[in-house]
Image (cartoon, rainbow, N blue to C red; front, top):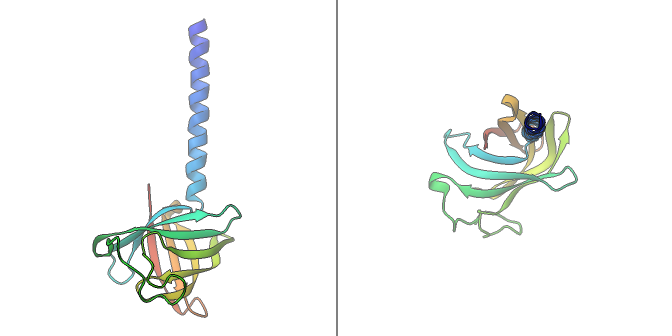
Length: 154
C-alpha cells in the first residue's frame, strides 16, 4: 500500500512538472522573448543570433549574441553608426529597443542595422506558433521598409 501511494505522489509531481514546463514553453512562444537566428532578406542566408529580453515592464530589447558565417567576427565594429554605438563591437550590441506589445504584434521601438548604421522604426509579429518572428524596419510609414523572418532557436 505504501508503494502505491508513493508512486501516485510521484505521478502527480511529474504531471505538475510537465504542466509547468509546457506552460513555460507556451508563454515563451507567445512572445518574442528568446533567442533568434536572423535570416538576411536579400540573400536568404543566416546572418546572426539575437537575444530578445523583457526589461520587466513589458518593454523588449534585442542584443547581438554572435554573427554567423562571414558575419562571425568577434572584433566587428559598427563603423557606420552615428550615435553612442559608433565604432563599438557589434557582438553584445543592443540593436532593438523600446518594443511594446500592441495586440498580437510588438511596435513603438527602433532597430539598428549595424551594417549601415541606420536606425529604423520597428514592428514585430510572431508566426508559425511562435517559431518565426517577422521583423519589419521602416522609415516614416510601415509601407516604406523591409521585413526579415527570424527563426526561434531552442
